[in-house]
Amino acid sequence: MNLILLGPPGAGKGTQAKLLEQKLNMLQLSTGDMLRAAKDKESEIGKKIKLIMAEGNLVTDEIVIELISENIDKSSKCAGFIFDGFPRTLYQADALSELMSSKKQSIDLVIEMRVDDSQLIERIVGRYSCKECGEVYHKVNRPEQKKGVCDNCKNINGFIFREDDTEEALRTRLFNYYRETSSLIGYYYAKKKLTTVDGLLPIETIHDLLYQATKNNL
Image 1 (cartoon, rainbow, N blue to C red):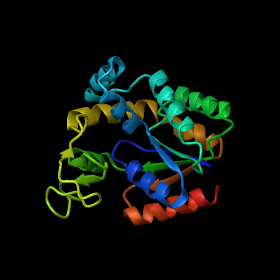
Image 2 (image 1 turned 45 degrees about the horizontal axis):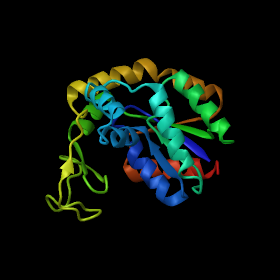
Image 3 (image 1 turned 135 degrees about the vertical axis):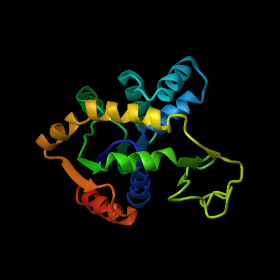
């Protein structure tokens, strides 16, 4: 069972992917996380990724496909994969389909999470995460219970504010998303794989909807 979560940055794809991952023994493949990990290695390609992400632009398809392939190969024992942040274009959708076919797998379900743009900006600009475990917080909507201490892993070594979580970079990312990703809705609808949910519903409600849709396809 392999699932794609579609939606603009800040729609809550990462949060929902982690919840499904825990319940269904699936593995979240967040292109954002993979790219940030590569960026932090300070290699030549990592420096290129760092610059591109800071400007709010998209990394080349070849880099992303290579990272996805490596992570799939390292995680063959899980029940399936949750693709978060990829594909974003029709070309990428075809490339992902070819990659999965080469590994004797397929994309079984695509869920689009819709959120109003003004809500996205509010969500993202205040976002930060634990340096150790990656738990996501928000300075207004979801701060840590004890200031400076991660609720999840009790880390006291600090939190990370992403370089591309500025309003200027976000508007560039939203422009890129609507320009390049909107065509995927029709693409997967035609393949009868698309389901849409309201990304402004409570987290638990969205999770229940996604869980049932995913479970029905297992």
